[in-house]
Image (cartoon, rainbow, N blue to C red; front, side):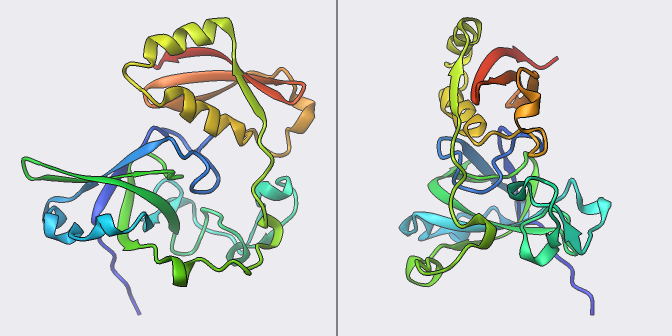
Length: 234
């Protein structure tokens, strides 16, 4: 049996690379994404009534890892990157059908000159991710307060994020172009996106991530994350 899926849209986000994308949706609440519908689905009637829902399900494709295949066993970062679990017991991107599912917050609908855009926030998706479907989040059916979450029962403890004097000045320069930049950086780095196996052995190591068209550099000292440089990518 074959199954053909056609993307209905592409989402634009600040996350230009897999590294440092929030590992779950809702962890970077201040960050907005723009779902741009393909021409054949850019009918505003498709979104009529969607403003009644505060949150939405996105079904999408892990497009950057699709050609890398899948494995029956994977190493969840939450378990330190060393312990293996079955792929269907995790949210690994390396899946047989490379499909993902995320809950995002509805922000608004934009419709200008035939271009239809759905603005959402709190997504954990790479820029350019193909969107396969959108469904409303229905609390009475989708929220299960007594459900157990296995090895991910609770949100990881956040780390403190601050900005060096140099980075704070750079942040002020970019704030007009990216109003939520400070909150986005703090949300992302607060999750400590370093590879789990690095741990405390990599204190002072300088890391970099791409947000928007910027390269954000930081290091971790005494379990606190400090942003040290914000430069425009070449």
